[in-house]
Length: 406
Ligand SMILES: Cc1ncc(COP(=O)(O)O)c(C=O)c1O
Image (cartoon, rainbow, N blue to C red; front, side):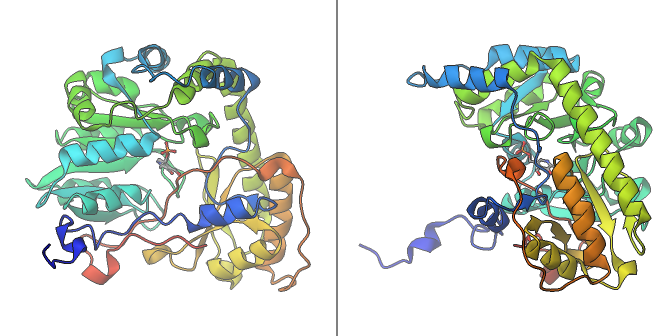
């Protein structure tokens, strides 16, 4: 037996990769009494028809699942695309992982508009690519000229997010068309599409073979724990991506539940209406509070600049935690210390959030007696975002993906 340390057999880059930090999810699952407004989950549980379909699937769980051809057909019809353009994934994170792996390797670059979902950056690094982080403008608009200028012959992918996590705003079709005109593979993560009225880019795939749209059933559909997402791309790309995806990566329970959810578009519209009206209500309340700058959003979350309150994001999040409420401090890069993100919850949770936040920013009681709340927060877990970083080609020390606050 040789005496080479076992870790030396690992591929280069793995030791330095930053794994997704799931501590905040583990904490929330250990403390189910807390209002979990930190991970952009849906406060509404799956509908009875979805639960019935998932339960029925469990009865035949001794069989391997099919490829989800019926669900792919339903998703294709829902989005106005051909079934061959649809690829299912174990959450949209699986689709994003496969797409990154298919496009980006050592020596390649990926252009990423930041702040955004940190997974684009982490997977680019994991597969040996170099992320070029293009900051949004100071007022959080997408910097299209800077994105165009960053693209070189080494650019193998451009990552965009619409509505964008955490800023909440969406790409316009005209902005996106400008980027697509470069011909470079362009991924648009539309995880939050069904939470508001942002434009869907699914149909653009037919005319733009370099467009890859990713979607999920984790957000408005409320199926985060089932892990079901999909990508929409030109059929030749879908064919290539499927060579990399693990076969049977989506369980029969998820496939059947997803199909049942697709069968009830009216329920999705109710969810969209609920999230949108609660988001408007929370935004209106935040706009009344001194020193805050909340950003209008098409997602199920609101980004709030707190610098004008004299409080840091960490102080506010800590205050909320003592009040049994989990929020997210956006701590990476230039968002450092000045931004908090809240997820839209149930009506009761949103009422409580407005009360807690109002007290947190005026320096309400620092050691408030925690009070417990009712059930509505015990919802499935989901992956989430951290904001990305500063200028193009940031120094090595600044380049690791932001760790998430606990
Ligand atoms: C922008 C964005 N994309 C994708 C995901 C993950 O989605 P999924 O649950 O489909 O893997 C998240 C989760 O928070 C997200 O914010």
